[in-house]
Length: 360
Picture 1: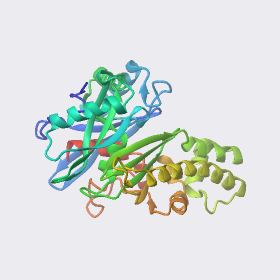
Picture 2: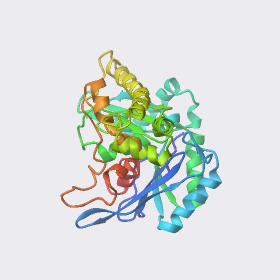
Picture 3: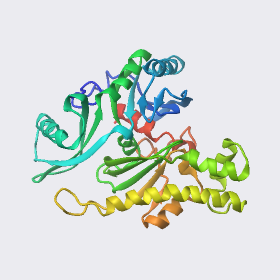
């Protein structure tokens, strides 16, 4: 079925009557939010932050305790005055695929074609699925390439019910990688990007073309995996290990034992990233031709701050690898100094991209 209230974008609320909406990024361990205001000078960040989430409320992106998540969101509403929000759904349970549709197809026609494809590509009954699509690129005569995102209805309902309990109006749900693409990708034509979002317990991997996800995957390796290597080598706390990773990393670390332990852990993650890079680089499209090759790698999330990690990945995939500017489509640094420092901002890309839905 079409989950029109949450995922459909064909009847957008006009900006002049839309409530002030925050981007809210919910993970297994935290809730991050960010809220913009608009002025004659452009966008400004008026509220942002992160609150810890008790273990077990959300597990691998699925809401396990709706009431508890609703209570946590209600506290956020009361403390920070958030009335409405855009939120993201996790990649773990998403089904992503691309397809071509004829030129000048109406949205109704495209949704009918998508529904037909769902039966063959998604192992969930259509009636128990929520889905939508984005246009990747359009050609006047040969049609459009679209990217379809589909989720189990129960997953989306868990988030919707939690927001209803909280009193925050949920304006939309979308794929996390789509939010990041809105924040970091150039408008219009953009390079095919391997997006690596290094979270606390897991790492999300996605292929973006023009900022639209064409493929997603989740790795069971995250920042905690890297921290534990340092903690065990030096017998230090997790906070001290995080500082070690950011300041010394896998190059120039003063303690060889810790550096080697960290390098081994980083190598595990890097190997998984390279596997996904090679998978896409050798993949054929639906016509038997080569898919658009990856032109760059973007590293995001708290563990992207590991010193030397971009250079390490670049040496293995041989394409430019960087920590992107998450404010790319928000404002120029010539005009605004962001209130969140660069390291911390890498954890807010999803919230930034979600908040941009209200102003772009």
